[in-house]
Image 1 (cartoon, helix red, strand yellow):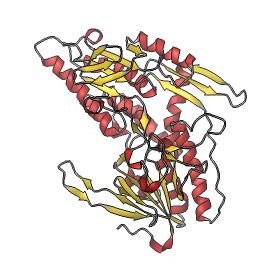
Image 2: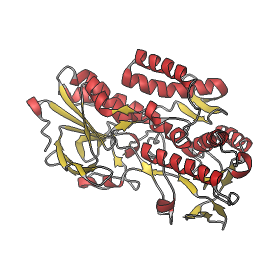
Image 3: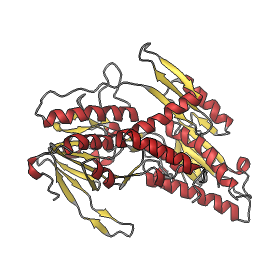
Image 4: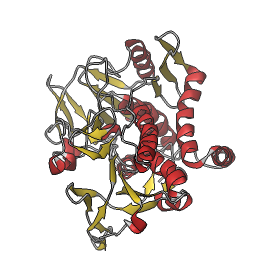
Length: 443
């Protein structure tokens, strides 16, 4: 057992180091941890953090993850919390204890044994995974973009496919250089535009046997009748037009029924050949949360929580972000799984934990504020809708202003983790080194 109840300080355990979990651990460490008022422990299955909305850029090769990843151990050292590597696999609410599965290296050798951690307050922020809905062959023959490892794996497969096509004697075969993306939500749309640019950049670096316009194809399949079905129609229509300009093949109203190593079948009998399939259709919370020690979950494994973000059956356990089903008063359903919701909930939980440590019983409640949506089509366009605080309506934006707003979201995340001046210096350094680097990852 990792005995973290030292000096009888209140122990806050945060499981999940995504954007919300890491921001929460950093802020609590800077306040309660630094002042010795509580012990803060962050647990995650990865050693480094990359902002999840950037994974499509890593997959396409337009971003080198080594220049943007954050080391959890370093962040913990700088901001007065503890980091422990591992995946949560069990919960004992009676003992206020969680169990973490063993950690193995790439050769299957155990590095870290199974451990248990005791908590006074447990906060679960494990995010979401892609939901393949049990479609035949989806798990075996497609790649999701839930983690940095998956994004890097897809990029390697894409790069190898281009190298193979360059060196083979026979002509490029049908589907050999076609990428099929299942799901036309934000991830699918942004990935398709990013791939259009990076595949052409890659082909320009000496791959002279490949005709990018003729040989490389990108297809987007969506069961709904339009791209970005969860966003306003005007934004959807604008993105649809931009994608068609990029010659992205759009298959709207097509439901995937099977994925094979040769391509994708849809309910209408259509077959789209492809050796590279990305599954970006739908999400669910990780399977281990399903009825974990009796906690209430919904059909996609999300922990059901009150507006205080406390789970319905245990006031000492909180959940937020994509893994939580939080009420949304005045709307039919729960708070949507968006990055802005996780950020807002993390901000609320900073106050909540301080109340708990101070012995206060009445906790603040969360109200979701929708500030709109932004969709980045790489170098080609950025579009979005911002919710008007005064008018109560929405304002459609595009072009440079929309791109600046999109980029500012990432900068705000970084400033939460590092502070203003660190981010300014990092940005300047990247602007300088960018001029001496390839515009796309070449390996």
